[in-house]
Image (cartoon, rainbow, N blue to C red; front, side, top):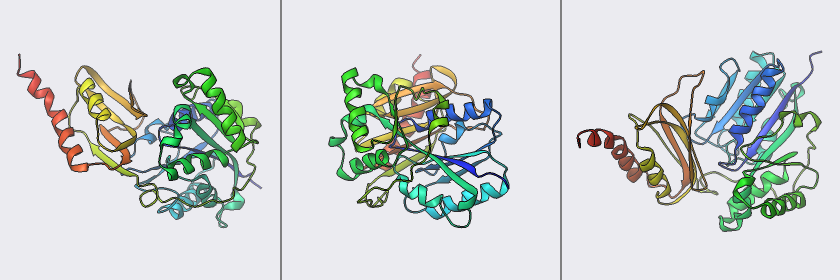
Length: 318
């Protein structure tokens, strides 16, 4: 009888570094010759994070919703289909940062295929700075971040370079108090030894007081997704992102810049932008996705069009 497929669930709030970690884990699996499938859930209507998945790895995407509400049933369906279509050693599920781990666990425990899978580990990414300042967030967001810690088998405290040493050590004590049985790894840029998973197993623990949080009705999160028709000036684009109205939790996408050739991966979290030259085995369309509260879509659309038109205006100044 074929052994069960190991399922790894990646969770953690928006911008904590899940995709960076997933890329490292997939590279390690490939180096070991393992057959791996990936299921990715994103809030926006346009996929961004799937670009890090190798072209030969089976991939299924759940867009435009959160596993914790509108598409939990679809996750079960996609997982069932992946199990039926491919012979795999492992499946990695990267949930949107607004998803509750328990909902993902429930979706992976559907009776029609539960005998085929083994939940090996729930891995939660913790943004060190965001955790230390979580009291400034809305209560339901704070509760979700804390639940993502409580349900994890592995806690990766990421971006420790953004806080002082005594700060991240205090964070380590905080999360250990909330989840004393979790394996804790402090790091930056999600730079951990992927082999840590060999000694980890899912505890199947429960947490009192669990309440599903709907992305729009409870957390009030909205998305702004647009394909881009032209390059943008890097400094102007950064300034635009930092000065957007509302609360911006996450920005990501692929951009062409006026000052440099090629395509760039763009990441925005906690007020900071990062541009990295990017090449992918999958075709990529320049695009931006922004997740936050109180987004002014019409204003953002207008300003984004103006940013793309500035290049032609600048060319005629000389």
